[in-house]
Length: 121
Image (tube, rainbow, N blue to C red; front, side, top):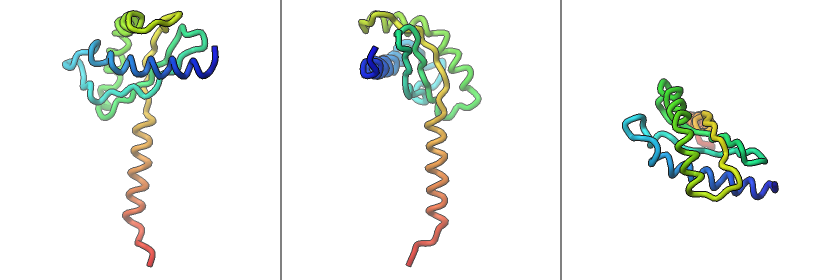
C-alpha cells in the first residue's frame, strides 16, 4: 500500500477517533477536555493501528484513563467500521504520547532563559 494512502488513513482515523471520544467515553469517567489524539500509526496491511493519546495534567490518573480507553476499544472499532469503509477495520491500541508536555517544558525553559537574559544595548 502506498505511503500516501497510509497517511490519509492515519489522518482519517485520527479525526474519527477524536470525534468518537465524546460519544463513546462518558464525561463522569474522566476529563475529556484533557485528552487529545495526537496521531495514529496504522500498519501497512491496515489490521493494526496505534493511537497516540496526550493527557494533559492528571499525571496520577493517566494509567486509569488509558485503561478505560483500551477497555472501550471494541466500541471504537465498531463505530469506525460503521462510519468508514476500509478493507479491514484496524485493531486499536492506545498509547500515551508525552511529546506535547515535553514541548511545553522546552518552551517554558526558553521563555525563562529569555526573561533572565538582559536585553542587548
